[in-house]
Image 1 (tube, rainbow, N blue to C red):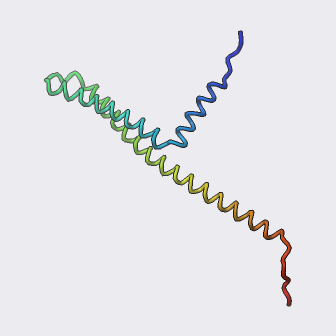
Image 2 (image 1 turned 180 degrees about the vertical axis):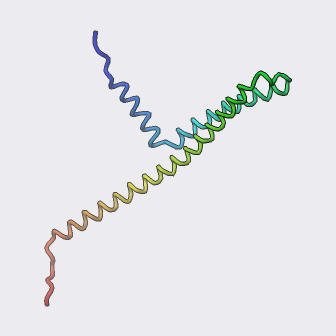
Image 3 (image 1 turned 90 degrees about the horizontal axis):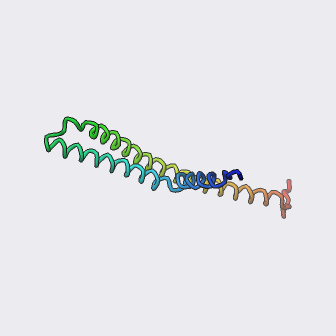
Length: 120
C-alpha cells in the first residue's frame, strides 16, 4: 500500500486561492448571484403557495428566501469591495516598482565618479 500524496490537494487549494485573489469580483459576484437567485426562487415558491391559499404552512420558504437574498446581496457587496482591493493592490505594486527603479538609478549615479569637482 502506498500513501496518497497531498500534492494534488495542495494544488487544488492554491487554484481556488488564486481565483479568489486575482478574480475576486467574478468569484464573489457569482456566489452572490447564485444565493440571491435561490432566494428569489424560494420567494416565488412562497408567493405561489400564498396566492393559492396554502401559504400558512410554507413560512420556511419565506425565511429561507430572506436569508438567501440578504446573504446574496451582502456577497455581491463583498465583490465590489474585493474589486476595489484588487485595484489598490495593482496601484501599490506599480508604486513599489517605480520606487525600486528610482532607488536603483540613484545607487548607480552615486557610485559613478563625478565628472566635475566643486571649487571653493
